[in-house]
Image (cartoon, rainbow, N blue to C red; front, side, top):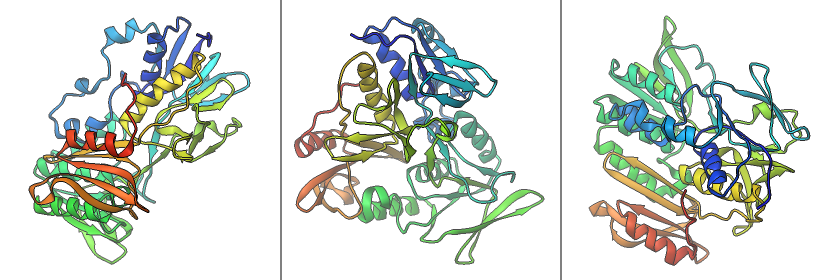
Length: 393
């Protein structure tokens, strides 16, 4: 094992914390610092749009680790300190308060920041959902609201719409795509998702851009679409995607495109690595660059980053994976199921709301999907995609 000296990790969510834990598990005994913009103890994000938003979980239940386990890690956890600059040559990070922190090895794990509609800031009743405070603020508003408009037909928008319906709200979901999750799962599955939401009372307004937000006295009253239709609202959630949180790296000299550009070892520069949603890496198995936004990737990539920091030479070659829970449906997707792929049912029956399917392009299986069939989907993935999952942390 190579000694990396002191390791400074910028970002203490799932990817950053998993990297720290993997370093300790692999034998790193040097200094370890976790710097995070959040004031909270590290927490998990997937429950925010579901259990936390619905009120089924208290915020503490979403914590990744309790204080005792964090103390046992032997790391300095600096909370509420956003990073503002990085110097790769000096291996230093400057914070918003003016502190300058040094690490012999740096790990960037700053995640994502939500996209916003023009003119949404400063209007009461318009929300994004990325962090714990966002979820708690939105929940407080929804408990007093009657009508919600969700802007965005992706995973987050669909999950928020589902949660709000279970809370009894009148929900409209608007988006530019013509089906839900079409860019990720294709038209056939997107149409199934649309029917599922419509059957539960969600009004879908797809295929139209948002023209503007209407307001009275600074509080949102509706969403006007490019078609001219006005969607009345007591609350609006903007879920039109996120961008990698790389603004603080301006002037660092690191290559930043769609995320921090890394090699196949997740290395952005000598002694500098990136992990999680913010990392764009070369996938040797697929022969192209990927950036994965999901919880599983955060944990699996952290293991490879930690090993490489300690002297291994491991490429990161995961089978891409994500899942979403909406109402009583769990959907799991493996591989790279593009909208252009042909979908065929391998097991089960969509009419019975339980099936596993494969995506094919040019005769080759590129993805596997499970709809309320998690075990069958995992087995199908192992047989069809020919790769075994990494060991989870």
